[in-house]
Structures are given as structure tokens and as C-alpha cells.
Amino acid sequence: MNVPLSHVLAVAAGLFVIGGVMAASRRSILLILIGVEFMLTAGSIVFAGAALAWGNIDGQAAIIIVMGLAAAEAGLGLALLVHGRRGGGSVDADGYARLGGDA
Amino acid sequence: MTAQLVLYFPHLSLALGGLVILLAACLRRTPATLFPILAGVFAALPGLWSLAGPTGASGIGCYYAGLLSVITLATVALTARYAARRGFAGDALYGLVLWSALGMLLLAASDDWLMLIVGLELASLCLYAVVASRLSDPLGTEAALKYFLPGAMSLAVLVFGAALVYAGSGSLIIADSLAAGGPIVSAGLALALIGIGFKLSLAPVHLWTPDVYQGAPAPIAAFLSTGSKAATAAALLHLCAEASPEARELLWPALAGVAGLTMAAGNIGALCQKSVKRILAYSSIAQMGYIAMAAMAVNDGGGEAALFYLAAFALMDLGAFGAVGLLSGEIGDRDDVTAYQGLGYVHPWRAGALAISLLSLAGLPPTAGFIGKFLVFGAALRAGYVGLAAFGIVTAVIGIFYALRVVAALYMQSGVEAHPAIPAPAGPAGGLALGVMAAGVLALGLFPQSLLGAIAALFGGG
Image (tube, each protein chain N blue to C red):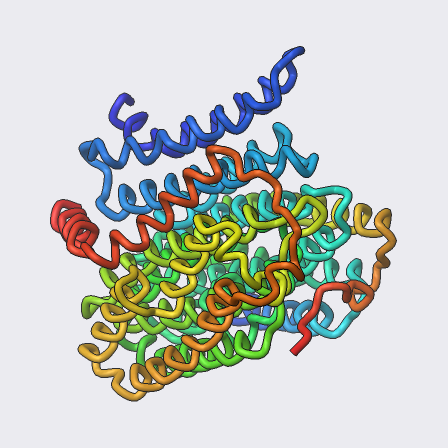
């Protein structure tokens, strides 16, 4: 393999941080979901690089499973969002504030 | 082949159970009462399997199969009448509960990082949908969204952590990969623990829990706080038990800080709440702090203590949330502490079960919570975490007050007229489950040796 594992890890870490910052700082549920997809993709990149570096196939199997999980999660998240909007909510995560502490 | 079938019997029975329920709904003229009965039968099978003590199964797998079977069975019993009266009972609800239990079982007994991730995600995805299953209730939707967003982040962090562990060791088997050691594996383990900490609602990332438990229907909140927490705590115990000494040196001070902060945040946060479901949520946060403390001492007897504590916690939280559900009217759950005034005289049995569960959550003798706390603190002291254990005992004493506040409201003489709201009838299954939970809390408190002996035997034979 031409690219050393450390470079792959650096790229993936960068992508993970970008996704994490996006998920933590954005208030729109759609953009939070996109940030989470970034973070999952970073994990997939690490799996791919490590599978090549170690020469075993486990990491590639992991990618397929992670892709499946990401798709299922995005599907359910969007369904919840549609349901929430139908009940008078919004895409804004801060718009859901009916539950709350009265401390 | 047959040996494999026997080994995976609990998983198969839960997976098939969900399918059978969905298929039964396709047939015309299926009575709605059939779904909870089917769910109960398929939920009970893993428990019977673990009682039979099959050859080749690990002791820990048997234990979690039994525990999750009891939790699922109790949830189905508590949900049956509750959901039917409020119009959200259906095949999807019970199917998803069974599949969620399947995910918890995979998560609790996983040896492999992929299995851990898939189990966590299967359990969580089904739970998000179940929390929102009362379609007419906007609070349920809000709770599901507030459960979903931190859950999605925690999955991403866990996946990245597992990928780093794999990059550092070249193996996806949890024991092999963590034994490899090295900075990348330690960093991956740290991220994986953060992801699990999100799910367990450990302290800096616990703020979603009260909202979710308040918004979810009470029996579903019972399932969330017991089943999902028990399975995730099992994964935490497993990871901590396999961590290399080098990783321990790096991570344990942080874990000690998180455990201490969680106990303090849970017990102090519960003090000033007016909503009973939020009080129970903060209390379950505090209980997870004790589990995290036991996880640090997992190889010095903390593991057995944590297993006992998980069983005790499951009984008392099912009892508490179950009682809240059975005491509620049909429009919304009975939530305000003041709405519980005098219920001890109007509904002595259900209120009594709630009082027993609360006293157990506070850790007062003669209940299971007292023995569990005793074992957990004993294990932490033996492992040398004296400061943390002392801090935990102080927070546990603070925690007694919130429980006593609700119990005092239950048996207050005044106000019986002020809140005459009549709860919906409990139904025989719900009442029976609640009684069994309360009796179990007392029985484990008075005769802890029965369960402790079983745990020791499972580990001896495992």
C-alpha cells in the first residue's frame, strides 16, 4: 500500500472532527444528521485503511455493516422529523422545548 | 448444527417472535389481545432457556438472557392494558419491543466489535420508534427526537472508536484487540467508552435522559431505563474487564471523574424536580454512576457486584415506572409530585409498590437497592478507590431525600380530595407484573444469597 496508515488516520480524524463540530454546533436537525454521516464515514475510512494495512478482510466487512447502519439511522431520523413536523414541530432542534425541567 | 441452534435459541426466539407478531397482524380477524400474549410467550423463552442451563453457553450469556427476558416480559405485561386503553397497541409496538430485546441481548453478550455496534444500533433504532409509538402525543415525538440525536452521535463516536481499535490491533475480537495495547488502541477505547457513556447517560452527556423519560409513555420509559441501560452497562463492564493495564492507567482517572460527576449530577439533579418521571430519570442517572464505579473495579469483584446491582436496578425501575403507568389517567401520565398526594390510601397496592421501588432506589434496607449499593461500594473499597467510594456514599445519602419526598406525598393525608383523578384500570397482567417486581425487590433485599449464589455458579461453570 502506497499511503501509510498514519496519513489515512489523519484524514479520517479530520473528517471526524469536522462532522463532530457540525453535529454539535448546528441547530437544524438535517444538518446534525449530515454531521453524523461525516463521523460515520470517517470510521469507514479508518476501517478501509486498516484492512489494507493489516491485510485482512474484517475491516471491509465492517464498512458494509456501517453503511447499512447509517442508512437505517438516517431513514428513521428523517421519518421522526416528518412525524414531528406533522405534529407542529420544526426542523430546528431548539424548537422542541415542550419537555423540560422546572428546577 | 443442533448445538449452534441451542446456543442461539434466545436470539432466534426473539427474532422469530417479532416476525410472528407482524405476520399474525396480516391475517384477518386477529384479535388485538393476541399480540401481547404472543410477545409474552416469545419473551419468556430466553428465560426458560437460561434456567435450563444449556451446555456450551457461557455463564454470562445465560445471565443476560435471563435478565433481559424478565425485563421484556414485565414490559409487555405493563404495556398491554396501558397501550390498549390509549389506542397505540398494535403489532408494530410488540414486534419492535422484541427486536429491541434481541439487540440488547446481542449487545450484552458480544465478543466482537461489529456485534457490539449492530446490537446497540438494533436496540436503539427499535426504541426510537417505540418511544414515538403514541402517534397522537407530540411529547412522545419530541422525546423520540431528543433520544435519537444524542443516540446517533454516540453511534458515530463508537464506530470511530472501534475503527481505531481495529487500526491499532488488526483484530475485531474485543479481547484480542484490546490486549494488543498501544496508543491508537487506547485512543479508540477512549472514544468507544465515550460512545457507550452517551448511551448510559454518564455525567457530562446525561442531559437528554430526563426529557426522554418524561416524554415517553411510562411502561416504555421502564423498558428504556432497564433493558437498554442493563445491556449497555454489560458492554461497559466487558470493555473495562478486557482493557490492557496501559489503557487503564490512561483512562481510569477520567472514568473515576465521570463516575463521581454522574452520581453527584443524578442525585442532586433529582432533588429539585417537580415531575416524578424526571426524578426517576435523574435517579437512574445516579445508579449508572454506581455501575461505572463498579466497572472500574471489574476484576476485583466489581463485576459480580455490578451484575447483582443491574438485576436489582431492573426490578426497582420497572416497579417505579410501572407504578407510574398504572396510576396514570388516560390523557397523560400522572407526573406532578403533588398529584400523588394521598394516593397511598386510595390505591394502596400500586402506591405501595411505588413506595417500595423508591425506597430501593434510595438504597434503604431491607430492599435490593441497599444490598446492591453495599456490594458495589464494597468492591470499590477493596479495589482501592476509597475517595470515590466515600464521595459516592455522600451522594447516595443526598439521594435518600428525593425518594422520601415522593413517598411522603403518597401517604399525605391532606389533598386526597384535591386530586381525585381516577387512574385507568391496571389489567391483570400489569398488576401481576407490578406485584412481582415489588416482591422481587424485597426478596432480593432479604435473601440476596439466592441470586449471588447463582451469579457465582454461572461464573464458576462459565
